Length: 218
Ligand SMILES: C[S@@+](CC[C@H](N)C(=O)[O-])C[C@H]1O[C@@H](n2cnc3c(N)ncnc32)[C@H](O)[C@@H]1O
Ligand SMILES: [Zn+2]
Image (cartoon, rainbow, N blue to C red):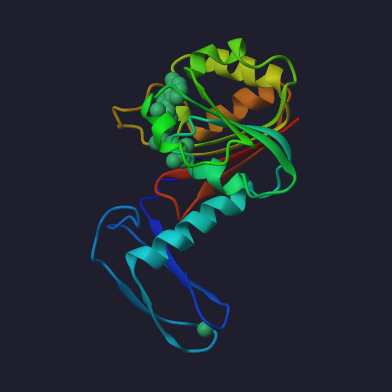
């Protein structure tokens, strides 16, 4: 069942190594805010301040922890300015990352990324099949992109053809949000993968506003 989670995690790492975090419903660590949280580490008792900077680092690392079992050739679907690609590029088992996005601004935003392992493809998700042949990539990763896909049937068919090993998809679902181009609920997305022979694990994320994560393997 869809979880109506309005919370975002704010956290930091204590000097003792403990992760200290709290869920809150107002301030996102990526929005400019002077909001800070004072907490006591529940392991060593030290007082900690969680400001925007430490919250952002903690939040990013939490996202990245869902993308650390990958290898081979990867497509970062709707890569934007490379939030996921910039993390994946440092992993030795990853050979090549194809960042695909239709926004012309991305090329500029990605100017500083190491091109030995990364290639930007300026294209629409609807044209995926024109760029990737059968079984040509090992994993597809995406974050906050699926809800912008109009022809979801074509997406599932294409991805099933060209992805060899797995899909790692993080996103949000808000019923009333007018920016969404499709209204597939996370459990319906999971079902669409299952229909095409994928083994799927759907997780609702209590720390990511309206968030879910789908891990699909062949
Ligand atoms: C919310 S951003 C997420 C960017 C990146 N994945 C991240 O984690 O920061 C969504 C991205 O999807 C891209 N996008 C949306 N619809 C697309 C489409 N039909 N084809 C290609 N890219 C698309 C947008 O241009 C944007 O860069
Ligand atoms: Zn501590």
